[in-house]
Image (cartoon, rainbow, N blue to C red; front, side, top):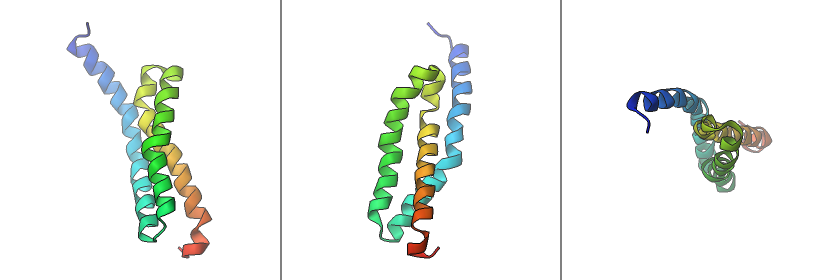
Length: 100
């Protein structure tokens, strides 16, 4: 059985990995909201669905097999980073349509 110091150590190191997701989450939420505001619900839904379901599930299944416990902590940051790539793709692809 784990004592509280071991649990604290696991949580402390894990949260440092998880906290990297905060670097990307704002841009992803902004991009989804921006495309909603521009009446492009399809792109907004794609970004939101990939971010909250597809990339999260893929990361949840694959990363722990490759990285162990650290893979669990990196699930959300990897999903956010992949979504950032999709968001940038749509920003570039649709920039001439919306003239931003």
